[in-house]
Amino acid sequence: MCNFQFAHAAIHDLQMTFRVFVTDDIDPQGVELLKAEPRIEVDERPTMPAAKLREIIHDYDAIIGRSATRISSDLLEAGRKLKVVGRAGVGVDNVAVNAATSLGIAVINAPAGNTVAVAELFFGSLIAFLRKLGQADQSMREGRWDRSALLGGELKGRTLGIVGLGRIGGEVAIRARAFAMEVIAYDPYIQQSRFEKLRVEKVDQLEALLRRSDIVTVHTPLTDETSGMIGQSDLAILKPGAIVVNMARGGIVDEAALAAALRSGKIAGAVVDAFAKEPLPADHPLRGLSNVFLTPHLGASTAEAQRNVAVDVCIAVRDALTSGELSRSLNVPGGDSAEWTEIKPALTLARQATAVGRAILAARGSKAVTSVEVSLGSALLGFKQPLSAAAAVGALQHVVDDQRVNLINAISVASARGVSLFSADSPATDDPWQVEIRVNGEKDSVTVSGTARPGTTPRLSRIDQYTVDVQPRETLVVLTNRDVPGVIGHVGTLLGSSGVNIAEYHQSRLDQGGDALAAIAVDGQISEAVRSKLLAIPDVRTVSVISFRDGAT
Image 1: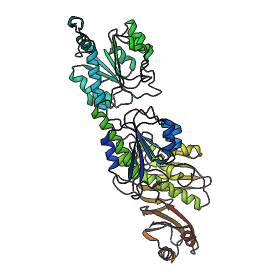
Image 2 (image 1 turned 135 degrees about the vertical axis):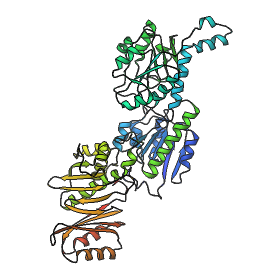
Image 3 (image 1 turned 60 degrees about the vertical axis):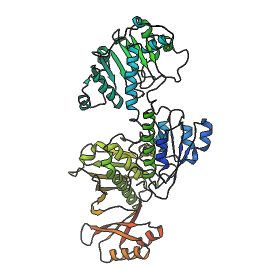
């Protein structure tokens, strides 16, 4: 069973068909990958007005576009079937990510596809600026030979200060060394090992980087933290001959302050490809300055980059729809780690164990879950957030009927409903792959645990004080009874006569003749009528039925 899954739909069901709306001239190679999937119908249209798109979006399971189409909260609300938003590019400035998260809609981008294109544009633009190639070309076309007036500069020996040593920053660093530049970088979110691998000196403070750099380039996303990161006071720190480059996002460098520093001669120049307002207004102060090199947001504008981002995002959207693979989603908690492949069984187990605990509580008369406590083995401690989200799905599925609940929004939905989530900071047991869930009601609690090693199907190993060994399948029946002869036979006979096939039957007891618990994995569904007949068997005390068919648990 797939482990990154949406609520309200068995998205791995081979009979299900998904409709995908593709717009903004997505590269054909990516679109063909979607069309090759028999379960996906593709509707490819040019960029359309927002009002028109709102009228039709309710028919689609996913939308894929570039920057021309704004994915607003209103559009997301209108897309009642939407499960995925795909952005063929790095930035998601045009996507209402918070609204998508609250609605349980995955937001997927293509962060790696244009990496080389941006890095190459960086050096192409920087060299063009230093060697005055734009002026040289124009003068030649105008019939002049201004060789003596076009004295330029070299990159060799200059200190390049990189703010943000992620994918693009790293590619810039690699190429900078080929130009014999000294490379330093500031990025508090990157491990020391990456600096060492790239042979880049780590600088702990932005101010220190600004003081040392001949050329400063930013390669960070635009967030509340990075907005205006390079402002008037920061520009004042730079050397008089410094050059500022922004090919990331408009707004990271304060454009008014940059223009002022360029006019005053405080810095030597700037290379800018991303602007706070695009298209760039005709009266923008940077347009009239001779010591700036401007390009109209060309970072990803290569045929190769457009193909790469289209292919990347179309593959990710296809996999999200057809197999529930959400590890590429920006708004899945902790979803940016490649190690998620190791915890797929644990995600399933956390959901299933919580659903079992919730169902047992309900059978005891405590239907409201007040909190869920997640304890993990040492190998899983680094994934507390996604595993807590998976547990929240198990607590809420089939309870919240007015909205979809999945890994994307389960934590926020749980909080809104007053369900608290707790995750222990230390390993639960010596088993590094154990998941233990304690589901608390107002007056009672249930603990369910199991093991979920990478590449295996998870199994439940304990329900409260009872030791079990069972793999949850389509349906799990948890039955408590007196440990007396005949109960197992009566249960098996009743299920068989009802057309229910038993996959596994595990009986556990504490003491002979005392209390016992059975965990029964069955194929198909258990109707309420069958459950009632099970309850009517002498010495059976409670019967909980947990369905896993919908893929959410």
